[in-house]
Image (cartoon, rainbow, N blue to C red; front, side):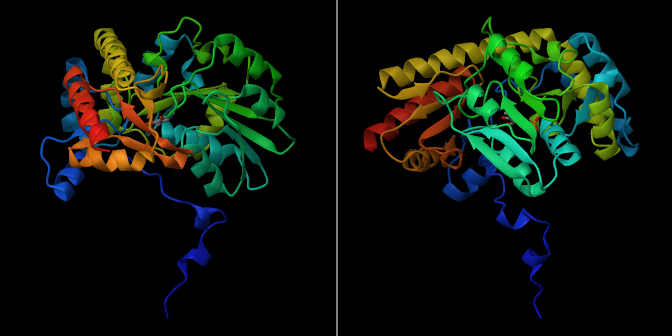
Length: 368
Ligand SMILES: Cc1ncc(COP(=O)(O)O)c(C=O)c1O
């Protein structure tokens, strides 16, 4: 007799839908018979990792038969130095997604509520649902987080609030004043996780580094990643900064060797390579302008973004445009699952990738 596995799952799991990742280049080339496909779908760094980082990875390749340093001693010291925090404030993760998950698994029970905004990062609802907790989704304001609505949504059952700054996929951001007064208004029984996956890209003067408030707000957790600016998405390494007691609790739940040895070495080198970071920021800033100008020339609306991606709007269901772009070997991200069926999210690529994308989009819009 067939087993009904669905009936055996933990509460919440049956209602889950898997995270929809960007289509891999190889898959598109196989399925659509195109070559030299370009992927602008997963907010990756078009420059890849820097030379120093690649050298650091090679220097530890002989060591992969051994388990990595489960406490990430060296990387934590480098991070502590750079961020002006203590190593006790730091938790390393298999991507910053793992930190999001660790926080949810450590603190949230099925009796709790988790607050996040409409159009916020898709992993927040997945984690909430997987635990069987209640998701409280506050309406967005101008595509961004409405912090007043998020504060008003707090109840005795609220345990966690996700704030994405800047937000993926909308590219909207919160100022230092806005975020500080929000944090000051949240009661102690609620943890606030400020997700800063795109922190390094933001050039606005009013944009805060939330790590400076770790001492002031013990219920604040800040997450960052090496996947974006440092070009290490495939290695899976990110980190959380929090009160030491929070870090100690996360440490009880995490797998002992959650960050692999090549990722630890690469991340340490990447952190010190300020030239590569600077070049990545400049490439992104030029690319964002290139895309915005092109959208304006085509008469397309877009949401101004401070990340390494931008959402462009169409009069029709954007899936049609997405499909037509796939046939031209161009992968971007449809974001219907984010409640934005008329938008596509485009990652900022190299100048050449952006040019080819703009050309393909022009052809597709003309044909539609
Ligand atoms: C807002 C946001 N947070 C977190 C992540 C997770 O990144 P990673 O797990 O690669 O560190 C992403 C990735 O796209 C993101 O967009």
